Image (cartoon, rainbow, N blue to C red; front, side):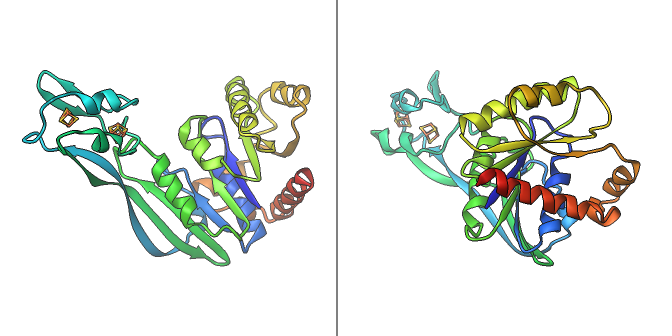
Amino acid sequence: MVISVASGKGGTGKTTVAVNLTLSLGNVQFLDCDVEEPNAYIFLKPKITYIQPVGVLVPQVDEKKCTYCGKCAKFCSYNAIAVVKGKILFFPELCHNCGGCTLVCPEGAIKEVTQQRGVVKEGVAGSINFIQGELTVGEAVSPPLIREVKKIANNNQTTIIDVPPGTSCPVVESIKRSDFCILVTEPTPFGLNDLTLAVKVVRKLKIPFGVIINRANVGDKKVDEYCKSEKISVLMRIPMDEEIAIAYSKGIPVIEAKPEYKEEFIALYRKIEELKS
Ligand code: SF4
Ligand code: SF4
């Protein structure tokens, strides 16, 4: 089973849930797809055994051969390449690496070159297989790196995915083909707003899902009311707890600081299995 752990916004405790579910189950695979800011390694402390650079093919124009006919720019539906006043402009952050401009150039003036986007790190943390994507600083396009993390993963092992925060392309790339998605939120107006956006995404992707309310003893009841009205299962409630907060700040997993939580995370997994069947 592949379980992705997502949240409509950062700072809701998504990584805490992903890490502690992983540690409670043991013998699973953990994918850190939060490639812009991977931090699960702080808690899992894996021994990294392999680092692989990840690159994508981007067009490079030889202006000596280019006649500035504009066919490449006309072809590119992402506006990643443009011909302006006898100059070729390329916007790597818009490029989807389709290779189409290279194919349509009548002068053979475009070749594809590899541009490094980040690295994938593999390792082990006890019985856990660990894979993490790490985007190059300043790099804006993360889906190719997320795809690489998922490509390397073992499809036959129970997998927990730490998804980037938000509801945009990197989130979709991370959660697609999951068997279940946990949405972590907090009982505040911001938490509710971002949860409703995240729910739209998982519903669109037709992925079964449930909600975990973190810091459940503060804020208001609006998230509960929303889940009830939308018939969404609230899988777990984690209260605001000073001990948990202190452990987090020291890189100590919840189940180490408060071992009674291990049973709760195992019960969470069982609940997900039930909801799936
Ligand atoms: S299609 Fe080729 S020749 Fe035409 S503008 Fe683009 S790079 Fe230059
Ligand atoms: S590779 Fe594709 S997306 Fe990138 S500039 Fe060329 S046509 Fe546009």
